[in-house]
Length: 196
Image 1 (cartoon, helix red, strand yellow):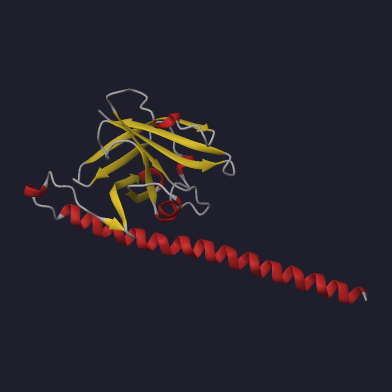
Image 2 (cartoon, one colour):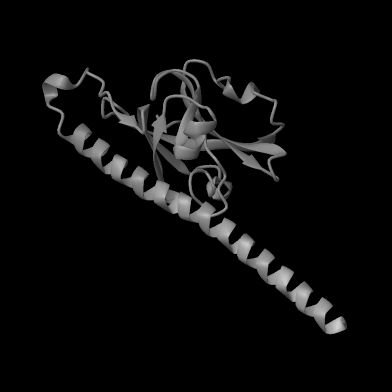
């Protein structure tokens, strides 16, 4: 009788292990597929920006990713992050890329706030926890204007606190990155200001 119980327990544990492994593969496999699609979109977007003629300098490109408009490109060299920025934040867009949460258009005066998931595999904003004061964030708008911003403040807030969308210094160009931390109990906020 004891042998049957042990065999049953082992069988249940094996099945549970298989289910957990399948869930992990599905989640990270989905992230991998999305990362490949984002990379292809970035390549196309960068080619379109480079191929613009001088006559089109004031014209903003109209580019979409999976049916959502793109506003620009964020690049953080230190942590090897480069994503198109989708122009709206909702449950669906957050699964696809980083998103505009608040603010003016990319590289305009004000606080351009970007939200992104803190994926455990390091995708999206999963590595922003490694940023430090003085690190560089590059933001390219759809006029192909790239501005470098320097991180000047990093802190955690309550999920309901949206005060981080306000400009720290009025009349400047700022970027604020927001991602989950502490098991979704807090938000990690990284603020950067235009290099002058």
